[in-house]
Amino acid sequence: MRHVIALDVGGTGMKAALVGAAGELLHQARRSTGRERGPDSVVESILAFAADLRAHGEDHFGEPAAAAGVAVPGIVDADRGIAAYAANLGWRDVPLRNLLSERLDGVPVALGHDVRTGGLAEGRIGAGRGADRFLFVPLGTGIAGAIGIDGRVEAGAHGFAGEIGHVVVRPAGAPCPCGQHGCLERYASAAAVSEAWARATGDRDADAADCAKAVESGDARARAVWQDAVDALADGLVTALTLLDPRVLIIGGGLAEAGETLFTPLRAAVERRVTFQKLPSIVPAALGDTAGCLGAGLLAWDLLATPTHPASEVSA
Image (cartoon, rainbow, N blue to C red; front, side, top):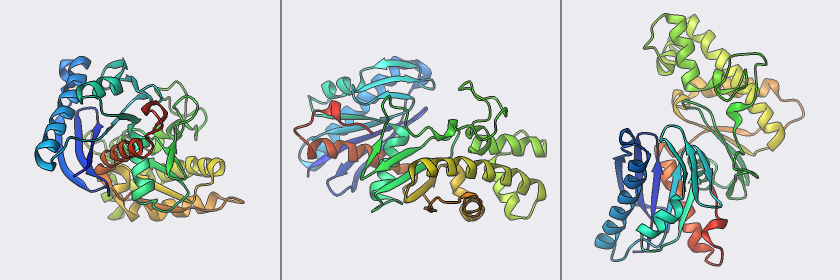
């Protein structure tokens, strides 16, 4: 059975799959990145995992994988196949695409940014299926974004497109590690809500999930913290939809797990802010933590679908 390798590399763990031509997950596995042993060990862990996946495919499906796709965090030069920088993995300028291709006996490899790759899957086969324009915004430790256009994700001229978390929504507000003040992710990420709720309760272990539960139970303090985050998020999203005019706005990440506790006030807040803009559908992400793997698989299949284009021309 023809298949591809898909790898989604996170800070501490890796998710992987063998993906069939129809997008089906034929085999799934997880491993640690081994980052405590340093960046070289992380790279070797990725290469060894990919080689084991190749062997599994050959043993169980009668042939090795025809291509591979890998999604990684941090700064990614997808055109050149280089994992340029990832603070949580400690690497710089790793020629990951070439290293993987060599370990996999020369099969084509596509390298993509983790959020854009997950967005590719959500847009093409998940919550944005059928939409010609979408914006995928996962709300996790930080906030990033993926701009979808006609079945692909726009990386931008320098690979930084979609960084909505660093849109300033509160001028002169909280300092952000990026160097600005008042960035969206300082107010509306899961981490920001956790910090605000911990301050409000005096409980250092309180987090965003606890805040959402308190909102549902009618806690006034929780509602105030939650509404502050929703208002900041709506401000950032309206800026984005004014610029991009997406047909569908897909919200994912840990904060989206609150369901309608988030989506009901968020839709209302966005609607209050739009004037001439067309209001997009605002929907929860559909693929959960499989999005990165599925997106990496799509990158790999895209390589095989356009054999006249070298891997260097495929980006997430």
